[in-house]
Image (cartoon, rainbow, N blue to C red; front, side, top):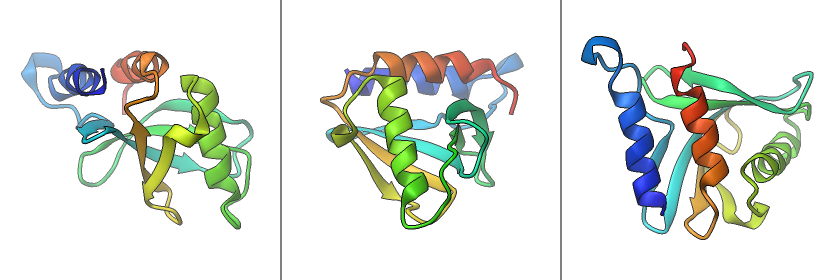
Length: 130
């Protein structure tokens, strides 16, 4: 269930060593699914998820690297394909809702999507230094 996943992941991020806040989780529950915050690096040497990035507002973002260039939506399409493959969900259940032309993107992942792989990646990288 997506709301429980978002709550579980948020608790992983919101409390750090000695109870200090590390960064906001890269995932929020919203009506119908979850919002996933991404930092995209186009023109990379490989397509992969690569830990976390903390933006200026303290928002945690899952770092994604794609080989595609940021022209005519090529990098965005490569990102969607990468997330679909890694999270084992159809591309049709992933939508960019903010940041079409920015490195910082907000995606909507439908609650119909299986969140097992999403949870695996977010929790795996939870201890990665920013």
